[in-house]
Length: 205
Image 1 (cartoon, helix red, strand yellow):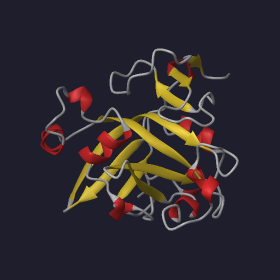
Image 2 (cartoon, one colour):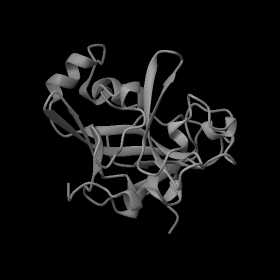
Image 3 (cartoon, one colour):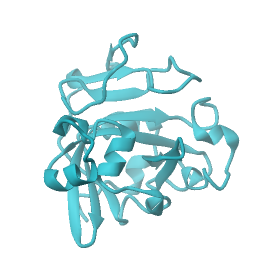
Image 4 (cartoon, helix red, strand yellow):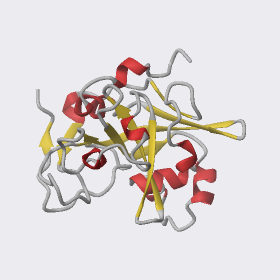
């Protein structure tokens, strides 16, 4: 467990956590087997003052674990079809988190292909939040679990230099749509497509 990111890592500004999760390793264990992937794209959701964050509705049955303690896994369904996974940040009750948007598989490509048979290329297996959840079988069953000692953990990985990181607005939202809280590894082919109208910014020094 020495390689697992500690709870204190998440108990910080979600934008900082989102940036520093780039290069970390997602580890998902099921049926005695653990699959690994490098995180290459994230989005920060800041809390109840962020119009695009689920916390604006308060603590409901759906958002219960979003308001949980830092290092909680918050998984929700979109469009009634797809799961998305988040890492909860800041102290319990605030309701802030980082959405995992894309990962680079580090092993088990055949297993991912079986779970995502409609993907035309390996690069399409995990280049979106719903895609990566499908590929790694992350579902509502993981909602509320610990990212430190649960079935879905995040491990220390290779540091990503600031020069390789870019920021853009978040994808697929209508409120606070201009806030540059999407972070990505610029030279990674595994990130999702950036809308052509989006400004792509360097990381603030």
